[in-house]
Length: 417
Image (cartoon, rainbow, N blue to C red):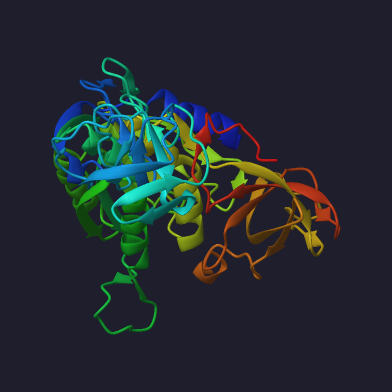
């Protein structure tokens, strides 16, 4: 087996993103566009609102009219316009969002009026344009509504619906395959015999990829047998654009993923100077990215968060690729373990709970941080970034944390204040 140099996490991410490309586009219905990234500029074809509209419930009037009492000549609801014209000495009762009748140039709020015997008196003067939404206030015809690269959330979809857009051009979602490896794995409904564990990574990685916006279209499990593993890798890559494997990437005799990736494609790195996740492997088969994730559940999900998720985001057209980082104050001391009597030689990502109080972020770990303890990720909303070369951090020390419960930021290097 090739012995790969151990590279820094920052270099590993750069390599992953260098070998990850934005996918093609497709046109989808508005209901299917939620969470997608816009692949075309959208321009308003008409003013919005298309007519002057009332911003309040009240009376449509002429601002310069000095009549004490005005005859109410109609009632304009939100809907089709009635056939009346406001003239001096008259007013039209109007509802919020209703079209302003011809002749009127202002709306007097109902709270500032007095009504009696079919007439209305203004208790306060109004100015031209008061409480009127002019045509084109939200959008003018020909104005760019949404730019290429805009993630489509509820406000964006609402804006598209406002102008009658029923289908939009978006970037495609990555099609992901998940392949777990190991003779020790059994399915969830199988009894646990001595030496066996349930195949939790299959479901955890499916959930992580789905949360990142990908379509998980294939999932399988391979025993630690070269022929079967090769066959399933090829089968997965025939139908998917991204392959995630878990397990089989260390240096043991039955860790077969790295040699098979060398045979099928190009391995770009095979070790990262981090804990957990040192044996993380990244390769391309043709132009398809393959992530050889470690088998320990925590290592697998931490590596997914740091490398796979940014790649999937980029493939979907996102420009915001990494979670925000903040400076946090440690609530308790942390002591790391190195090799023998040496200082830790890898960046360590510890699972933590980060809270904010009066503008200051505080962090405490989720307990025992071993790679097999999946519970250390349950409830964690941050990853503490503890640099190599330092073995002890005191209570009150300031370190960097990646916020797992926040959306990605531009480029990934911005820090929240």
